Length: 239
Image 1: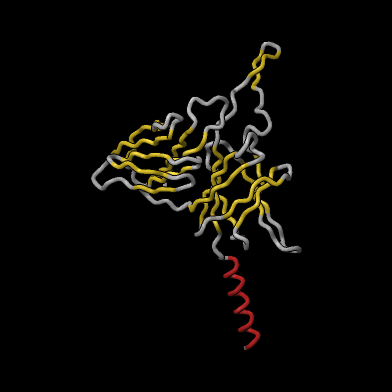
Image 2: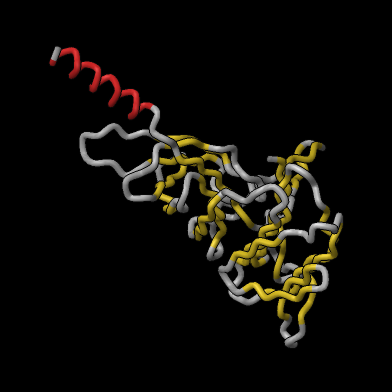
């Protein structure tokens, strides 16, 4: 009887371990693509690949820090500027972070996971090369009808939301919802210009769309001689 009870307990523990909830991770690289360049060879135009460091690594490998002797897993992902990666479900790491290296094995960034069961990691370059990148991790839990604003610049941004005038500090996140009776709402994102005035980097109308969430990520332009120092990446997703 004791043997049978032990076997049942062991089976239950194994089943529980197999069903342990996993953490969902998505990554969004932000920035401006390098200028499109071509060269003429034999009367045919060929695209010149982007210079090294001007775009994020196209292929990365994610892994957890594990104790010596433990099995080390790796999860491959492809990155593309301005595009969120597909969901990656991983066991929650003991130290709360996922390590990232390039396909060549070079260490790249450390992604701290957000509280809860899902993370959206925003990644952008902090210098002239994507070899030096910064990360901001957000809970990937916005709901139907949410409009989330994220300020990745070093300056406060202004937001007009209908009749409201709002301030979004550097590194801050704000979630707004449309008034119940509204179907569309005028919205602008404003940045502080060199002369002290506020200039629009995005002016639009947001629309209520059932079963969707929308996000606006504000970041510093890193292209060659950008006309506007601040850019906004609007994201709309069906839930």
